[in-house]
Amino acid sequence: MERKVMFWTLFLIGLIGLSGSAVAQGPLSPGQEKLMAKRAAQADGYRKLMEEIKGLHIDSQTYVRDYVAESDQIATAFSDFMKGMKLDGPPRYMPDGTCEVDVKVTLQQIMQCLKRINLDYPDPKRTRMSFDQMGQYTKKTVFTVTGVGLPPGQKAESAAPKGVSYKTAGIPGWENVTPQGRLLAERGALTDARRNLAETVKGLKVSGNTLVRDFVVLNDQIQTSLNTFINGVKEAGPYRYLPDGICEVDVEVTIQDVIKELNTIRQHYHAGFPPQCVFRDTTFESILSWGPPKVIKATGNAAIPAKGYLKGRPAGPTSDASPAGDVGPAMPPWASQKARAKGTGVPKEGETGTAARLNTERAAETVARRNLVEKVYGVHIDAATTVRDYMTVSDKVKAEVSQYLAGAQVVGEPAVMPDGSIEIEMELPLAGLWQIVSSEQLAKNE
Image 1 (cartoon, rainbow, N blue to C red):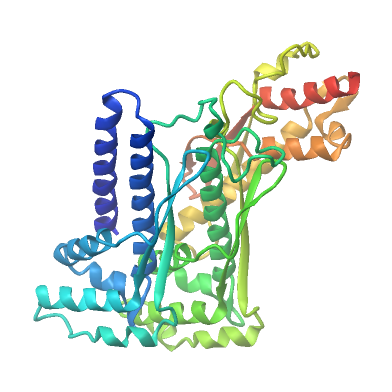
Image 2 (cartoon, helix red, strand yellow; image 1 turned 135 degrees about the vertical axis):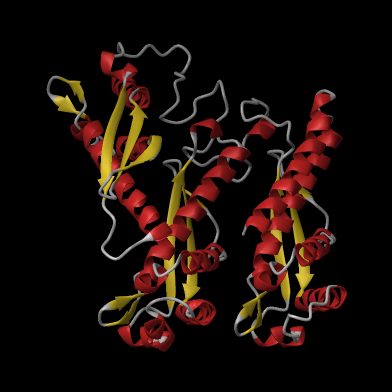
């Protein structure tokens, strides 16, 4: 994992250094913008393709990522192979300034690369691998991914037409969203979907009193292995851009793939654990007898971040901008304040290490968000009307308030208490709420 992080850090530093030298000379020409956007798209494509390839099985117990991590020499040779991949067709330049490129590699090319590396860097301690058998573990023979990139000098506040995301132009709530804003919303939705999928997988029943979660908490390595598997799950369809400024995406995985992954993890890590006999003797195929669906699906969603809108133009309900010429009601004192709420999460019985910390933080954030929502709903618009009452005015107001609430941010770092519980504080500037209320009042007066 550390080698992987180091490689991509150096790779991105190199790209940033290259782009930085171009920006330092002055504004980029249209040709330079296209070139830098293409390079950024290539880097994104290589990263996605590498993640997909590293998830391939060499044999029933070994992934490509396991082999690549054996030494820095192997990791470097494999990275050089990846960076040598040719683009599959010409780059596509979109109206919003983004560039899309397709990168393709065949299973045969991957196997040939691994064979060559194995010969170039022999290790007497390494068991001789037969890379030809990789074809038994995957039905795919061609792997293609699409990388997306932006020129480094393009700013979100540009008012130029290309500053608006071409994919979401014309969708209510997305009219002024930049390409960066769309990409950030997509990434947030995918992350949320994978997190939800992980919770579903960990909740699968192995026996009458045992869940997958009980095995995951045995060791941080097991947790990491399952997370790596989940993070490799691809989108199950296109992103959906909802009128309220929320991006949604679905992910899915077959129950057979989950069982196969759990068996692989068991084979790798059962030795040395205190409850090793339980771990070794478990038949994960018994999951099927508890009636889970053949395909496990999860949906993730994320709101457009505040920096994802064009500056100087209306940017949805959380914008501070008002249409020119509109004179709204006087802003009440509460509109200049921030609503804050705390939430406490308690570790689940039996959970330890990384799994306990992450699940406890998530529980604390859920409670804090719920408490914050209740505070916002209780804000008085006037002496007789609260935000909760106001949300019944129209579906539009309700959707705008929901989008506003999705922008709640964690304040500071989670506080770990002596008893192991974790406290998290979240906040929302009430100016965004007042923007929704005043806009509705203006609409009523027209």
